[in-house]
Image 1 (cartoon, rainbow over the protein chains, first blue to last red):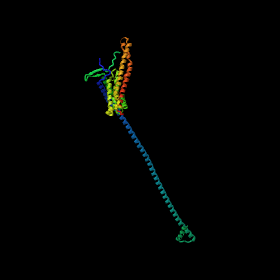
Image 2: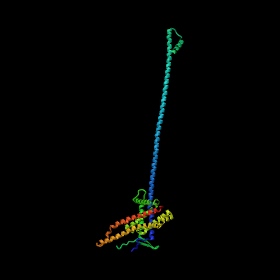
Image 3: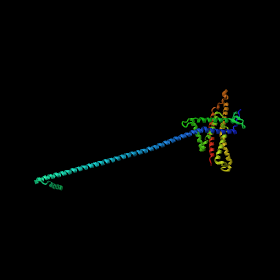
Image 4: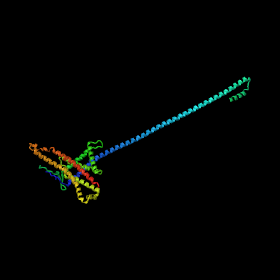
Length: 164
Length: 246
Protein backbone atom coordinates (compact mmCIF):
# COMPACT_ATOMS: atom_id res chain seq x y z
CA UNK A 1 0.00 0.00 0.00
CA UNK A 2 1.47 3.29 -1.06
CA UNK A 3 1.85 6.06 1.44
CA UNK A 4 -0.23 9.19 1.09
CA UNK A 5 -0.07 12.65 2.58
CA UNK A 6 -2.94 13.82 4.69
CA UNK A 7 -5.52 15.74 2.68
CA UNK A 8 -4.67 18.88 4.62
CA UNK A 9 -1.04 18.86 5.61
CA UNK A 10 1.78 21.35 5.51
CA UNK A 11 5.40 20.61 4.74
CA UNK A 12 8.08 23.27 4.65
CA UNK A 13 9.93 21.55 1.82
CA UNK A 14 6.85 21.25 -0.27
CA UNK A 15 6.01 24.89 0.26
CA UNK A 16 9.57 25.85 -0.68
CA UNK A 17 9.37 23.63 -3.74
CA UNK A 18 6.10 25.28 -4.75
CA UNK A 19 7.61 28.76 -4.43
CA UNK A 20 10.65 27.64 -6.40
CA UNK A 21 8.43 26.11 -9.08
CA UNK A 22 6.46 29.31 -9.48
CA UNK A 23 9.65 31.38 -9.71
CA UNK A 24 11.19 28.95 -12.18
CA UNK A 25 8.11 29.05 -14.37
CA UNK A 26 8.15 32.85 -14.15
CA UNK A 27 11.72 32.88 -15.42
CA UNK A 28 10.90 30.38 -18.17
CA UNK A 29 7.93 32.43 -19.34
CA UNK A 30 9.95 35.62 -19.19
CA UNK A 31 12.84 34.24 -21.20
CA UNK A 32 11.05 31.95 -23.62
CA UNK A 33 7.67 33.60 -24.12
CA UNK A 34 7.65 37.27 -23.15
CA UNK A 35 11.13 38.24 -24.37
CA UNK A 36 10.80 36.79 -27.88
CA UNK A 37 7.24 38.00 -28.34
CA UNK A 38 8.07 41.45 -27.03
CA UNK A 39 11.08 41.59 -29.34
CA UNK A 40 8.92 40.72 -32.31
CA UNK A 41 6.27 43.24 -31.26
CA UNK A 42 8.92 45.92 -30.76
CA UNK A 43 10.55 45.33 -34.13
CA UNK A 44 7.14 45.30 -35.77
CA UNK A 45 6.41 48.61 -34.09
CA UNK A 46 9.74 49.89 -35.37
CA UNK A 47 8.92 48.82 -38.89
CA UNK A 48 5.54 50.48 -38.71
CA UNK A 49 7.16 53.65 -37.37
CA UNK A 50 9.72 53.56 -40.16
CA UNK A 51 7.01 53.11 -42.76
CA UNK A 52 5.11 56.04 -41.33
CA UNK A 53 8.27 58.14 -41.26
CA UNK A 54 9.06 57.24 -44.85
CA UNK A 55 5.51 58.09 -45.88
CA UNK A 56 5.73 61.42 -44.07
CA UNK A 57 9.04 62.20 -45.70
CA UNK A 58 7.75 61.31 -49.16
CA UNK A 59 4.69 63.43 -48.62
CA UNK A 60 6.78 66.36 -47.44
CA UNK A 61 9.12 66.15 -50.42
CA UNK A 62 6.14 65.85 -52.77
CA UNK A 63 4.68 68.99 -51.22
CA UNK A 64 7.98 70.74 -51.67
CA UNK A 65 8.18 69.65 -55.31
CA UNK A 66 4.65 70.83 -55.83
CA UNK A 67 5.46 74.21 -54.37
CA UNK A 68 8.61 74.40 -56.48
CA UNK A 69 6.73 73.59 -59.67
CA UNK A 70 3.98 76.02 -58.82
CA UNK A 71 6.61 78.71 -58.32
CA UNK A 72 8.28 77.72 -61.57
CA UNK A 73 4.99 77.83 -63.41
CA UNK A 74 4.22 81.26 -62.01
CA UNK A 75 7.74 82.38 -63.02
CA UNK A 76 7.24 80.98 -66.51
CA UNK A 77 3.97 82.82 -66.94
CA UNK A 78 5.60 86.05 -65.81
CA UNK A 79 8.54 85.45 -68.11
CA UNK A 80 6.24 84.82 -71.03
CA UNK A 81 4.39 88.03 -70.25
CA UNK A 82 7.71 89.82 -70.02
CA UNK A 83 8.78 88.47 -73.39
CA UNK A 84 5.50 89.45 -75.01
CA UNK A 85 5.66 92.87 -73.43
CA UNK A 86 9.23 93.55 -74.52
CA UNK A 87 8.49 92.22 -78.00
CA UNK A 88 5.50 94.44 -78.39
CA UNK A 89 7.47 97.39 -77.02
CA UNK A 90 10.18 96.73 -79.54
CA UNK A 91 7.62 96.40 -82.29
CA UNK A 92 6.01 99.66 -81.23
CA UNK A 93 9.33 101.36 -81.21
CA UNK A 94 10.29 99.98 -84.60
CA UNK A 95 6.98 100.96 -86.12
CA UNK A 96 7.36 104.42 -84.63
CA UNK A 97 10.81 104.65 -86.14
CA UNK A 98 9.61 103.44 -89.49
CA UNK A 99 6.72 105.86 -89.43
CA UNK A 100 8.95 108.72 -88.39
CA UNK A 101 11.39 107.83 -91.13
CA UNK A 102 8.61 107.66 -93.67
CA UNK A 103 7.26 110.99 -92.49
CA UNK A 104 10.67 112.53 -92.70
CA UNK A 105 11.29 111.19 -96.20
CA UNK A 106 7.90 112.23 -97.37
CA UNK A 107 8.50 115.70 -95.98
CA UNK A 108 11.88 115.84 -97.69
CA UNK A 109 10.44 114.71 -100.96
CA UNK A 110 7.66 117.27 -100.65
CA UNK A 111 10.09 119.98 -99.85
CA UNK A 112 12.32 119.09 -102.80
CA UNK A 113 9.33 118.91 -105.05
CA UNK A 114 8.15 122.29 -103.82
CA UNK A 115 11.63 123.70 -104.38
CA UNK A 116 11.69 122.20 -107.86
CA UNK A 117 8.29 123.68 -108.54
CA UNK A 118 9.39 127.00 -107.15
CA UNK A 119 12.52 126.97 -109.26
CA UNK A 120 10.62 125.94 -112.35
CA UNK A 121 8.05 128.63 -111.65
CA UNK A 122 10.75 131.20 -111.14
CA UNK A 123 12.51 130.09 -114.33
CA UNK A 124 9.25 130.15 -116.19
CA UNK A 125 8.57 133.58 -114.76
CA UNK A 126 12.00 134.78 -115.81
CA UNK A 127 11.57 133.26 -119.25
CA UNK A 128 8.18 134.80 -119.50
CA UNK A 129 9.53 138.11 -118.37
CA UNK A 130 12.28 138.01 -120.93
CA UNK A 131 9.84 136.89 -123.60
CA UNK A 132 7.43 139.63 -122.70
CA UNK A 133 10.08 142.27 -122.67
CA UNK A 134 11.45 141.02 -125.99
CA UNK A 135 7.99 140.96 -127.47
CA UNK A 136 7.26 144.39 -126.03
CA UNK A 137 10.46 145.74 -127.50
CA UNK A 138 9.64 144.25 -130.86
CA UNK A 139 6.11 145.60 -130.67
CA UNK A 140 7.36 148.97 -129.63
CA UNK A 141 9.92 148.94 -132.45
CA UNK A 142 7.18 148.06 -134.80
CA UNK A 143 4.99 150.81 -133.45
CA UNK A 144 7.66 153.41 -133.21
CA UNK A 145 9.31 152.27 -136.37
CA UNK A 146 12.74 152.58 -135.23
CA UNK A 147 15.13 150.76 -133.19
CA UNK A 148 15.06 151.52 -129.65
CA UNK A 149 17.99 151.35 -127.47
CA UNK A 150 17.42 147.85 -126.47
CA UNK A 151 19.08 147.96 -123.11
CA UNK A 152 17.45 151.17 -121.99
CA UNK A 153 14.10 150.02 -122.85
CA UNK A 154 14.45 146.62 -121.44
CA UNK A 155 15.28 148.25 -118.14
CA UNK A 156 12.32 150.43 -118.43
CA UNK A 157 10.06 147.53 -119.25
CA UNK A 158 11.47 145.35 -116.57
CA UNK A 159 10.75 147.95 -113.94
CA UNK A 160 7.32 148.26 -115.43
CA UNK A 161 6.77 144.57 -115.20
CA UNK A 162 8.03 144.56 -111.61
CA UNK A 163 5.32 146.98 -110.74
CA UNK A 164 2.65 144.69 -112.14
CA UNK B 1 -19.02 2.72 -0.65
CA UNK B 2 -16.55 1.47 1.87
CA UNK B 3 -13.46 1.93 -0.25
CA UNK B 4 -13.61 5.72 -0.64
CA UNK B 5 -10.38 7.08 0.65
CA UNK B 6 -9.74 10.74 0.20
CA UNK B 7 -6.13 11.60 0.87
CA UNK B 8 -3.44 14.01 -0.15
CA UNK B 9 -0.73 13.32 -2.70
CA UNK B 10 0.87 9.92 -2.96
CA UNK B 11 4.39 9.79 -1.55
CA UNK B 12 6.63 8.36 -4.21
CA UNK B 13 10.05 8.58 -2.60
CA UNK B 14 11.64 9.94 0.51
CA UNK B 15 15.06 11.51 0.22
CA UNK B 16 16.79 10.52 3.43
CA UNK B 17 18.29 13.92 4.26
CA UNK B 18 17.25 16.66 6.67
CA UNK B 19 14.72 14.44 8.33
CA UNK B 20 13.36 13.08 5.10
CA UNK B 21 12.25 15.13 2.11
CA UNK B 22 9.22 13.43 0.62
CA UNK B 23 8.80 13.50 -3.11
CA UNK B 24 5.09 13.26 -3.83
CA UNK B 25 2.87 13.24 -6.85
CA UNK B 26 2.52 16.98 -6.35
CA UNK B 27 6.21 17.53 -7.02
CA UNK B 28 6.39 15.22 -9.99
CA UNK B 29 3.21 16.54 -11.57
CA UNK B 30 4.34 20.13 -11.00
CA UNK B 31 7.55 19.40 -12.83
CA UNK B 32 5.64 17.77 -15.65
CA UNK B 33 3.37 20.82 -15.86
CA UNK B 34 6.35 23.18 -15.90
CA UNK B 35 8.04 21.06 -18.55
CA UNK B 36 4.84 21.08 -20.62
CA UNK B 37 4.54 24.84 -20.38
CA UNK B 38 8.22 25.21 -21.25
CA UNK B 39 7.77 23.08 -24.36
CA UNK B 40 4.61 25.03 -25.20
CA UNK B 41 6.59 28.29 -25.00
CA UNK B 42 9.26 26.89 -27.28
CA UNK B 43 6.70 25.62 -29.77
CA UNK B 44 4.70 28.85 -29.78
CA UNK B 45 7.69 31.13 -30.16
CA UNK B 46 9.55 28.94 -32.62
CA UNK B 47 10.38 30.72 -35.85
CA UNK B 48 8.59 33.94 -35.05
CA UNK B 49 8.58 36.55 -37.76
CA UNK B 50 7.89 40.25 -37.76
CA UNK B 51 5.66 39.90 -40.80
CA UNK B 52 3.61 36.99 -42.05
CA UNK B 53 2.82 35.50 -38.67
CA UNK B 54 1.87 31.87 -38.17
CA UNK B 55 -1.08 30.70 -36.07
CA UNK B 56 1.29 29.65 -33.30
CA UNK B 57 2.78 33.11 -33.21
CA UNK B 58 -0.66 34.68 -33.10
CA UNK B 59 -1.43 32.58 -30.02
CA UNK B 60 1.88 33.54 -28.39
CA UNK B 61 1.31 37.22 -29.11
CA UNK B 62 -2.27 36.99 -27.90
CA UNK B 63 -1.18 35.47 -24.58
CA UNK B 64 1.52 38.06 -24.01
CA UNK B 65 -0.70 40.96 -25.00
CA UNK B 66 -3.64 39.83 -22.90
CA UNK B 67 -1.55 39.26 -19.78
CA UNK B 68 0.28 42.54 -20.32
CA UNK B 69 -3.05 44.32 -20.71
CA UNK B 70 -4.37 42.69 -17.56
CA UNK B 71 -1.31 43.75 -15.58
CA UNK B 72 -1.44 47.28 -16.97
CA UNK B 73 -5.10 47.69 -16.08
CA UNK B 74 -4.92 46.20 -12.60
CA UNK B 75 -1.43 47.10 -11.41
CA UNK B 76 -0.38 50.06 -13.51
CA UNK B 77 2.35 50.77 -16.03
CA UNK B 78 5.19 50.49 -13.52
CA UNK B 79 4.34 46.85 -12.78
CA UNK B 80 4.65 45.64 -16.38
CA UNK B 81 7.75 43.55 -15.50
CA UNK B 82 5.35 41.49 -13.38
CA UNK B 83 3.53 40.23 -16.46
CA UNK B 84 5.58 36.98 -16.67
CA UNK B 85 4.92 36.37 -12.97
CA UNK B 86 1.17 36.79 -13.40
CA UNK B 87 1.31 34.66 -16.51
CA UNK B 88 3.16 32.00 -14.52
CA UNK B 89 0.45 32.01 -11.83
CA UNK B 90 -2.26 31.72 -14.46
CA UNK B 91 -0.46 29.01 -16.40
CA UNK B 92 0.72 26.97 -13.45
CA UNK B 93 -2.59 27.12 -11.62
CA UNK B 94 -4.77 26.36 -14.64
CA UNK B 95 -2.56 23.65 -16.09
CA UNK B 96 -2.00 22.01 -12.69
CA UNK B 97 -5.72 21.86 -12.02
CA UNK B 98 -6.42 20.61 -15.54
CA UNK B 99 -4.15 17.59 -15.03
CA UNK B 100 -7.15 16.10 -13.21
CA UNK B 101 -8.73 15.73 -16.65
CA UNK B 102 -6.25 13.01 -17.58
CA UNK B 103 -6.68 11.35 -14.21
CA UNK B 104 -3.47 12.64 -12.69
CA UNK B 105 -3.30 14.12 -9.22
CA UNK B 106 -3.61 17.90 -9.62
CA UNK B 107 -0.79 19.69 -7.77
CA UNK B 108 -3.26 22.46 -6.90
CA UNK B 109 -5.16 19.95 -4.75
CA UNK B 110 -2.13 19.98 -2.47
CA UNK B 111 -2.34 22.68 0.19
CA UNK B 112 1.44 23.13 0.11
CA UNK B 113 1.40 24.27 -3.51
CA UNK B 114 -1.11 27.03 -3.00
CA UNK B 115 0.38 27.95 0.37
CA UNK B 116 3.73 28.49 -1.34
CA UNK B 117 2.22 30.80 -3.93
CA UNK B 118 0.27 32.74 -1.30
CA UNK B 119 3.35 33.17 0.87
CA UNK B 120 5.25 34.50 -2.15
CA UNK B 121 2.45 36.91 -3.00
CA UNK B 122 2.15 37.97 0.65
CA UNK B 123 5.89 38.66 0.75
CA UNK B 124 5.56 40.83 -2.33
CA UNK B 125 2.60 42.71 -0.84
CA UNK B 126 4.54 43.36 2.36
CA UNK B 127 7.66 44.32 0.43
CA UNK B 128 5.80 46.92 -1.62
CA UNK B 129 3.96 48.26 1.42
CA UNK B 130 7.25 48.81 3.24
CA UNK B 131 8.89 50.19 0.13
CA UNK B 132 6.07 52.69 -0.37
CA UNK B 133 5.47 53.83 3.19
CA UNK B 134 8.79 53.08 4.86
CA UNK B 135 9.08 50.56 7.65
CA UNK B 136 7.64 52.88 10.30
CA UNK B 137 4.85 53.92 8.01
CA UNK B 138 4.11 50.27 7.37
CA UNK B 139 3.88 49.54 11.12
CA UNK B 140 1.86 52.68 11.65
CA UNK B 141 -0.66 51.62 9.01
CA UNK B 142 -1.75 48.86 11.40
CA UNK B 143 -2.90 51.41 13.95
CA UNK B 144 -5.23 53.16 11.58
CA UNK B 145 -7.84 54.54 11.76
CA UNK B 146 -7.48 54.21 15.56
CA UNK B 147 -5.14 52.22 17.77
CA UNK B 148 -7.78 49.79 18.92
CA UNK B 149 -8.03 48.45 15.36
CA UNK B 150 -4.48 47.06 15.45
CA UNK B 151 -5.40 43.42 16.20
CA UNK B 152 -8.04 43.43 13.49
CA UNK B 153 -5.64 44.97 11.00
CA UNK B 154 -3.04 42.34 11.79
CA UNK B 155 -5.69 39.64 11.42
CA UNK B 156 -6.88 40.99 8.10
CA UNK B 157 -3.30 41.23 6.86
CA UNK B 158 -2.56 37.63 7.79
CA UNK B 159 -5.97 36.67 6.51
CA UNK B 160 -5.07 37.75 3.01
CA UNK B 161 -2.72 34.87 2.16
CA UNK B 162 -4.75 32.37 4.18
CA UNK B 163 -7.98 33.24 2.41
CA UNK B 164 -6.21 33.16 -0.97
CA UNK B 165 -4.78 29.75 -0.15
CA UNK B 166 -7.99 28.15 1.02
CA UNK B 167 -10.14 29.68 -1.67
CA UNK B 168 -8.04 28.06 -4.37
CA UNK B 169 -7.28 24.88 -2.48
CA UNK B 170 -10.89 24.41 -1.36
CA UNK B 171 -12.31 24.82 -4.84
CA UNK B 172 -9.97 22.32 -6.43
CA UNK B 173 -10.15 19.81 -3.57
CA UNK B 174 -13.93 20.00 -3.47
CA UNK B 175 -13.91 19.06 -7.13
CA UNK B 176 -11.62 16.11 -6.44
CA UNK B 177 -13.69 15.00 -3.45
CA UNK B 178 -17.03 15.35 -5.19
CA UNK B 179 -15.73 13.57 -8.27
CA UNK B 180 -14.48 10.70 -6.09
CA UNK B 181 -17.78 10.53 -4.21
CA UNK B 182 -19.90 10.60 -7.35
CA UNK B 183 -17.69 8.01 -8.99
CA UNK B 184 -17.87 5.67 -6.03
CA UNK B 185 -21.58 6.31 -5.59
CA UNK B 186 -22.32 5.57 -9.22
CA UNK B 187 -20.30 2.37 -8.98
CA UNK B 188 -22.41 1.18 -6.01
CA UNK B 189 -25.67 2.12 -7.70
CA UNK B 190 -24.49 0.40 -10.83
CA UNK B 191 -23.68 -2.79 -8.94
CA UNK B 192 -27.00 -2.56 -7.17
CA UNK B 193 -29.09 -2.16 -10.32
CA UNK B 194 -27.15 -4.15 -12.87
CA UNK B 195 -25.33 -6.64 -10.66
CA UNK B 196 -27.76 -9.39 -11.56
CA UNK B 197 -26.54 -9.39 -15.15
CA UNK B 198 -24.56 -12.53 -15.84
CA UNK B 199 -20.79 -12.68 -15.89
CA UNK B 200 -18.58 -9.68 -16.64
CA UNK B 201 -21.50 -7.53 -17.79
CA UNK B 202 -22.67 -7.17 -14.20
CA UNK B 203 -19.29 -5.92 -13.10
CA UNK B 204 -19.11 -3.03 -15.59
CA UNK B 205 -20.20 0.15 -13.80
CA UNK B 206 -22.28 1.43 -16.70
CA UNK B 207 -23.68 4.36 -14.75
CA UNK B 208 -20.22 5.84 -14.46
CA UNK B 209 -20.45 6.79 -18.09
CA UNK B 210 -21.83 10.28 -18.69
CA UNK B 211 -22.44 12.09 -15.42
CA UNK B 212 -18.81 12.21 -14.27
CA UNK B 213 -17.88 13.78 -17.59
CA UNK B 214 -20.41 16.57 -17.09
CA UNK B 215 -19.25 17.11 -13.54
CA UNK B 216 -15.68 17.08 -14.74
CA UNK B 217 -16.40 19.92 -17.14
CA UNK B 218 -17.60 22.03 -14.27
CA UNK B 219 -15.18 21.00 -11.52
CA UNK B 220 -12.08 20.38 -13.57
CA UNK B 221 -12.32 22.80 -16.47
CA UNK B 222 -14.47 25.68 -15.28
CA UNK B 223 -13.25 25.76 -11.69
CA UNK B 224 -9.63 25.33 -12.76
CA UNK B 225 -9.70 28.28 -15.11
CA UNK B 226 -11.81 30.35 -12.74
CA UNK B 227 -9.56 29.78 -9.74
CA UNK B 228 -6.44 30.48 -11.77
CA UNK B 229 -7.96 33.75 -12.90
CA UNK B 230 -9.17 34.68 -9.42
CA UNK B 231 -5.81 33.94 -7.84
CA UNK B 232 -4.01 36.01 -10.49
CA UNK B 233 -6.53 38.86 -10.15
CA UNK B 234 -6.18 38.93 -6.34
CA UNK B 235 -2.39 38.88 -6.67
CA UNK B 236 -2.47 41.87 -9.03
CA UNK B 237 -4.98 43.82 -6.96
CA UNK B 238 -3.20 43.24 -3.64
CA UNK B 239 0.24 44.11 -5.00
CA UNK B 240 -1.18 47.03 -6.97
CA UNK B 241 -2.90 48.36 -3.85
CA UNK B 242 0.24 47.92 -1.77
CA UNK B 243 1.97 50.77 -3.60
CA UNK B 244 -0.97 53.15 -3.24
CA UNK B 245 -0.40 55.76 -0.60
CA UNK B 246 -3.48 57.06 1.10
